[in-house]
Length: 118
Image (cartoon, rainbow, N blue to C red):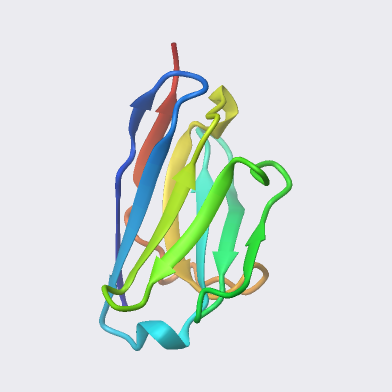
């Protein structure tokens, strides 16, 4: 399993970013994929999950209405569109295999940093 995140950066409050998670080494369309994040000094926090066929999505209350998870099984990539960014969204964002309550720590990618600051 290899997952590579990209798309992070420094943005102002209210801004937007689109994160990508490129997968390889496993049968991508069999797996739910999850985004988690780790803010400075805090533990891993579940953010969003998408089902293997993309028909079901799930979000943490803290991001609902602002974040959108999607996937393209042709190119083995999951996306996280993040809008209306807040300072509390500052974190290292990782993708991994699995669902909202059973995502894999061992499959976490290296992460992409999102920093929200004026």
